[in-house]
Image (cartoon, rainbow, N blue to C red; front, top):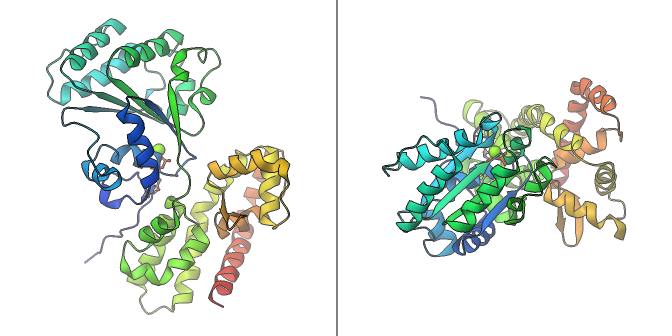
Length: 369
Ligand SMILES: Nc1ncnc2c1ncn2[C@@H]1O[C@H](COP(=O)(O)OP(=O)(O)O)[C@@H](O)[C@H]1O
Ligand SMILES: [Mg+2]
C-alpha cells in the first residue's frame, strides 16, 4: 500500500492540523481585527501567506493562539485570489464577493450592477450584526488591472469606513508599493496595519520537521540545509521521507545526499528568483554575510530588508544566511547587476548544482563533528 507523504509543498495549507507556528503573528492579527482594523500581510513568495489566510478563520487557531474566539459564528469571510482577477471589472469583483455572501445562506441578489448595490448589501449585514472580512490574496497582481481606478479604491475604503468591513490583504511588498502610481493617492492605501511574515521560530521549524517521527533523526540536518523556512523544510522533508520509505536499506548518509540533490534541483529556481529580486545593495550585503565579513552600520536598511525577505537570520547578534543551501548558492553566483549574466549562470545549472550540493554535504558533515 502507498503511504501518503505528510510533507507537501505544492499547494497552500488548508487544514490547521498541517499548519505550524505563527503564534506571534496571529496574536497581532487578531488584536488588530478585534478593533476592526485592516491588515496588510507582507512576505516573500512561498513564506506561507496563502496558508496563513486559509487557516486564520479557524476556531482552533483562535483558541490555541489567542485563548479566545475572535470571530462570531455569524461573521463572514470572503476570499479572493487577485491573481485570477487581472481583467475583472469593479462590478464583476463585487459580484464575486456577493456570490460568496449568498453561498453562506444569506438571501441576496448577487448580481452587482454598481458600487451602490454592494453598499446596500453591506448595510444590511452590518445592521444584522455581521462582520465581513475580505481576504485579498496575491494583491501584487492588481497592479496589472486597468479597471481598478481611484474611484474603485475609494469605494473600498468607503465600505470599510461606513460598514463593519475589514480587509486582510497579502502581498510581497506594501500595498502601495505594488500598485500603480496613478491610484496610490487613494486613501484606501493608508488604512492598513502591517504584519510581516518571515521565517518560522526555531521550535516551530522543529515541529514541522518532526511532523512524522521518522524524520526526527534529521532535525538538525534539515535546519541546516533548509533553514526555518516552511516551504524549503517541506520540500526537503518530502524527499527524506520518501527515501526512508522506499529505500529503507540505504545508509542514512546516502539518503541525505540523494535528498539534497532532489531538493536543490527544485529550490534552485526559487533561489534565483529571490536573487533576481534583490537590489544591488542588498546583494552586496548578502555576499558579505555569506563570507562572514564585517557588517557596517550603513548596512542597516539592507539587513532589515533581507530579514523581511526571509533570507537572513540573526543569531547571538550575528547575521547568517538562512539556509546553507542558499548560502552555497550565494557563494556560487557571480556578483552581477546584469540580467544576462544571471541567465548565463543559470544555464550552467548542473555544474553549479553539483558544487552547491557538495557544499551542503560538507556542512552536514561538519555539523556531526
Ligand atoms: N505555517 C506553515 N506550516 C506548514 N507549512 C507551511 C506553513 N507556511 C507555509 N508552508 C509550506 O510552504 C508552502 C508555501 O506556502 P504558501 O502559503 O503557498 O506561501 P505564499 O502564499 O506566501 O507563497 C506550502 O505549500 C506549505 O507546504
Ligand atoms: Mg500565495
